[in-house]
Length: 221
Length: 221
DNA sequence: CATCACACTATCCTTTCGGATATTTCGACG
DNA sequence: CGTCGAAATATCCGAAAGGATAGTGTGATG
Image (cartoon, rainbow over all chains, first blue to last red; front, side, top):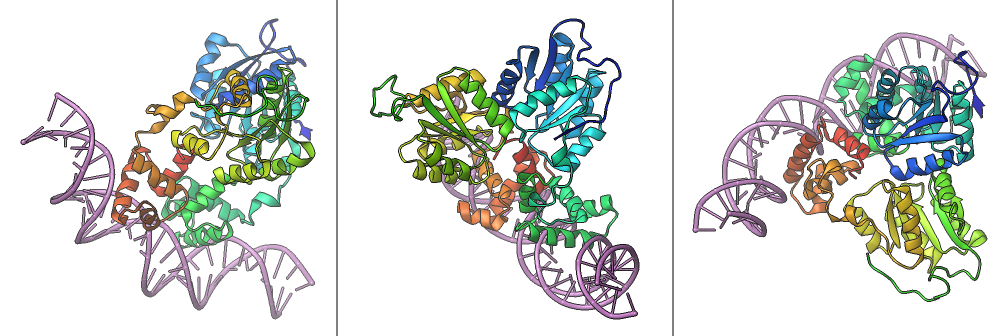
């Protein structure tokens, strides 16, 4: 399930923070989720976890509560605009590795996150036991991501959309007009309209707004 | 918070299942979430928790793994169509109380759930400690819901939307046309257009699709 | 080489959206 | 009682969206 690339020849082990316990910063907007996850991770006894509910709060916590050995960010959280938020955190956190926690498990999302320098990608669909393992894996300097989800996932949630339709759908979900999507993809507006129509059919959507919502609900974007 | 009467003064008025431990059925589509929550609740030692990842699986688990003293359902889960899913579970579970677990904490959603016979409503924004208390509260026969969230919630995630605008937004998010929204709310189409315009302004949305996505991202629907 | 699937383009036409502006009703407030 | 704001309604207009139908280019497949 796991896979790695390598990283940090630095030192095999975990921390950059002196000799204290290994420290985690966990940010998720649902306190029930972040606190139970924190409790679960802390149950091992070797981790100390600081929680925040927004990206800004997490960044602000770097100073007073830092330094940390690993930072985990929820991808759908106030302040995060997708991976932009991670970039902000990385800039603020310096060398401290940043991992992504997300309900979304689409292959290209995972790949984008890793490509953008994430230390790992933890889908919320993973078993809790794997979480412990993954966190320790990341702390050891490795990059963690769910290999099985990365491969293809051609079946279920694909909805039979072709690549171009996905790109158009992405624009739809951002609230762009056909004209704007066309410009972005270097297409004619009519072509975009065609894609919107076919893609809406495939998703059983009654119009572009519905299509965007369905895509959102199914993690297609 | 209201109360409800139930027989068996057995212990603290908790269980209907013979003499064993108190048993919970927890259904949430994110295994990381459900397992950590289960671990958190089970840490007290007095609860036995069975987890499932979909509504259908949860209903199917009633026979083989039941009976249960309390059932908790995630509101955003495959199989649940809002409160319809809860109704299905209630029919299948008979007298066993059913509570709702949800990322959404809108007052009217909470009220609808309670009105539909939920034993409680647990927003994922609640502290983990409150969760334990709330679960035990519900097990004792009381109906739990977050009183502070029920009152008004005039502040943060409100975005200054008026009730009517919220209703229109709801329709937007379902992909309805202005015409259809108007029919549903017994308004003229022009009025709906007005609301769409003002609501889009308040959300900084560039059009209806964008507004729907923003609303979705901010849990306004 | 014929065929097919896919992506793209083109026209034409109708419906819906989006925006501006003005008027009316109604309840709340001082 | 007058004032105010929310809510609803009424026209008007241009800009998008939605739908249908037809045609082009290209790469894969048999």
